[in-house]
Length: 209
Image 1: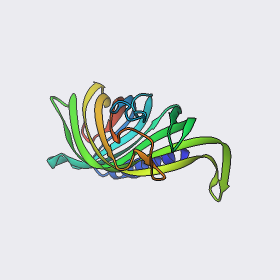
Image 2 (image 1 turned 90 degrees about the vertical axis):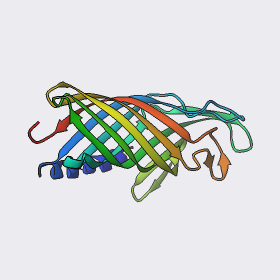
Image 3 (image 1 turned 180 degrees about the vertical axis):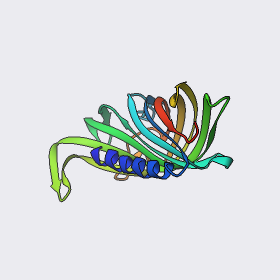
Image 4 (image 1 turned 30 degrees about the horizontal axis):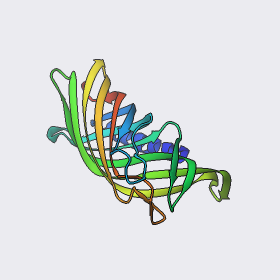
């Protein structure tokens, strides 16, 4: 998780530097949860839990309302994966992490008090299964096995400016995760189509705002 946060912080610094050249940049911290198809066929759902997200959108071509964005969303606490089949029997802690990079269309209207964005892009889901044993390597020691899966991402939000450049942003995201239901060739979740709903608090860096 620390590496993901550092990577995202680097992205924010770079995009903020670009923002100094008369661009528009939104940065936010979000809190939300996920909704996925119910458990079935003996496999659990990926619904539920508190997710914390870090996100940023940079509108490079303000006249056409076009830009780029990215985010990382991680489950705040570990969940318990419990199942009894040929792949696994018992319970093991795990944590899902979503990350994505998007093309963004959006802007700010109505006397610059309300904004909105729609986005589409690519990313992935990192499923981390934890154990009591640590494995050490060149970059340090970890106590989890990570399984990464490619994902398509689609999202939309509404920005409500509550004070100056500060906004509250209800948002919805939809992930189509390839092979999210499998690990080492065996199924572990019922479905890889996951929705995430959140509310972010953020700040807009906008020339002439």
